[in-house]
Image 1 (cartoon, one colour):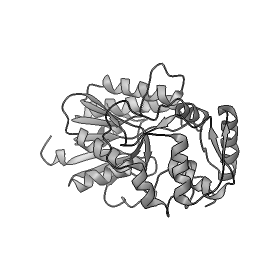
Image 2 (cartoon, rainbow, N blue to C red; image 1 turned 45 degrees about the vertical axis):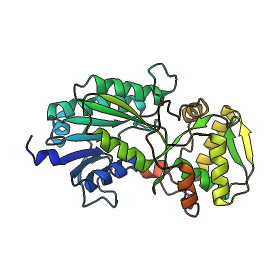
Image 3 (cartoon, rainbow, N blue to C red; image 1 turned 180 degrees about the vertical axis):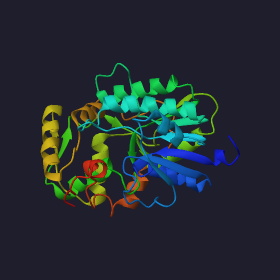
Image 4 (cartoon, rainbow, N blue to C red; image 1 turned 180 degrees about the horizontal axis):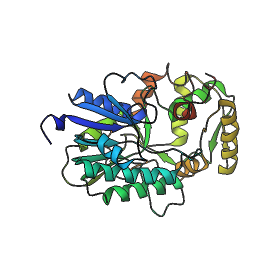
Amino acid sequence: MTGADTQLDLVTGAFSYSGSHIAEGVLAAGRRVRTLTFHPDRPHPLHGRVEVLPYRFDDQVALTQNLDGVDTLYNTYWVRFDHGTTTFTNAIVNSRALFSAARRAGVRRIVHVSIANPSLESKLPYYRGKALVELALAEAGVPYSVVRPTLVFGGDRDVLVNNIAWILRRVPIFAMPGNGDYPVQPVHVDDLARICLQSAGDDGDDIIDAAGPETMTFAELVRAVRRAVGARSPTLHLPSVLMSAGSRALGLLVHDVVLTPEEISGLTAGLLVSHRPPLGQIAFSAWLEQSRDSIGGFYANELQRHFALPAAPG
């Protein structure tokens, strides 16, 4: 590759949550950005600043051409839940195709965004699927970094913490799975992006946890958000089965998948923490204090973002 070629990086899903922050960081470093997306015509602030191409998982020749001249591939592609033809199984196959195309195109390094505590033995499709994608990456033959974030928060496309605040502002009772004593370790999306960019300069293959400097129970996180937004709604502790039913009911009202049974299981199992020294620098408590007037002002609808459904009530 020429010197000019090495100034080009590709960020899958640069119009998505973590992908947009990674792309902004790459641009700030003076490098060019190309993105692959399912929504090339969707309005986004990065339009005009990045080269936009559609995903071509069905055409290996086209997919390899889309990666031509790319130095670092930052991969954020994944699915949160099965929806129609969008499934975990297809996401694993597509990820394998992407890594193979990167090898053929001569990509120098892949930085892959995974999840904290994936496992091939997990009974949860999300966590097992993430582990299978990591395995496919290890077998692809391209030097790589796997970055494993915990609970990501911050930015203007935050889903989980923002929607907790939205519910607390509008619903008279906040439902929580179990006793809420399971730990979470929030990491700011800007910290995640910084860790990804730093790992692009590593040698060899590595696995890096992206976790924030504060660990708390989920109940403590909800109480902190409740105080920040001035809500007074009490907490109702529900068994996971009833919590899943409640999430489905709320989902019907907001036209979204609020929380899947697998996400509830991962949360209550304490999987959203790292067991390594934290690399994140932005404390959740400090960010929450600064964001108290803005979080929960609107509902962040995942189905609308990814599948263009009608907007949920604000």
